[in-house]
Image (cartoon, rainbow, N blue to C red):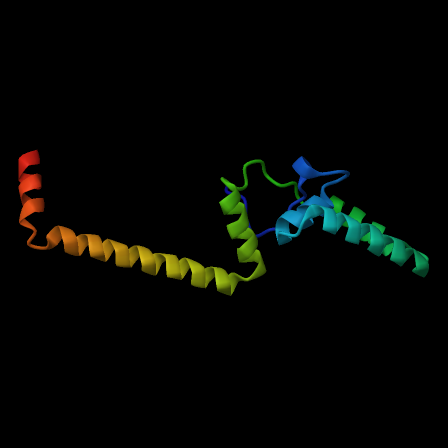
Length: 129
């Protein structure tokens, strides 16, 4: 079964402790160092309320979330694409639609060239037979 690329996963390959911060960074596209610093700051700030809610949330996330499958993305471009899908699905849909329109236009241009009355092209095709 193919893993879902829009789901949050723990990133054990880039983990420092349990992979929660690396998973958040992979999911959102934010630098992992910024996520780790924000996690530490939020955890320290939550100590003022008595219970360290940041630490509790971290442990619960590490316990509940699945590990990221190895080879989830085929390339760096694939990873960036899926991060964009998670951030803004509508924008990603427009980009894919735009790419298909561009490919369709190029294919139509090629088809028009091949089917046109181009004697030089027809001679080359005949010579290949």
